[in-house]
Length: 214
Ligand SMILES: Nc1ncnc2c1ncn2[C@@H]1O[C@H](COP(=O)(O)OP(=O)(O)O)[C@@H](O)[C@H]1O
Ligand SMILES: [Mg+2]
Image (cartoon, rainbow, N blue to C red; front, top):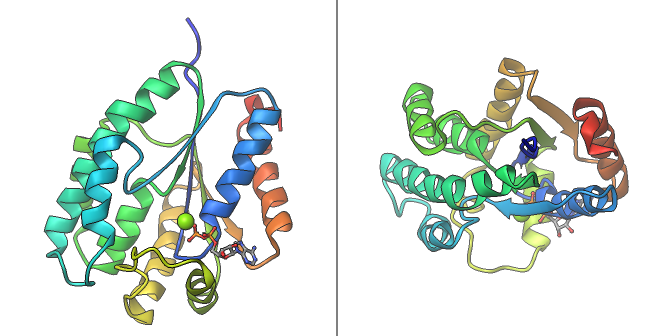
């Protein structure tokens, strides 16, 4: 039987460089001969992208925090069942721009929902699926928000418009997540220039997932 593909997630705050680095990692993996599916959360599958619009547009207080967590859980279930699992079964490498750790950071450390509640929702959405490797891009909150502000606006401002304090809790949250699960998570300094960050990411993937051939 063919071995299932590998699942890598990129995490971090707004403007950390997740989308930039995911495209570069995908190129490297394809060059190494892998079939590679790049996806994102919230969203990723058709149904989940419809739910994404509800989550990322509008005012910061559009949803009560539990409603928001339930919308994310519903979108994730669709994404996992319709896109991620089938791709992994086909032996592909799946890269996701945000996944379960963003929920712990944003809805847990950011909004203050109990981590135990979010873990229960995660089990409902993902059952036992977890990433093989999670790369957390880390940089000072102000730097990330300044980068995000330079990006072309598309109305997806619900989280970017949160307070600096909220974004600081996210950054600390990602550090806690990494400290609690060092087998899966690696924190990378994202303040350096794009190519240096890419090289660091490729080195981590090579070391953690030798099958990558990077
Ligand atoms: N290492 C870097 N140094 C400087 N600017 C960067 C770097 N990485 C990404 N950027 C720029 O910062 C902005 C946010 O990057 P992006 O990849 O969209 O971040 P994210 O997806 O994490 O929000 C983009 O305009 C991107 O070109
Ligand atoms: Mg992005």
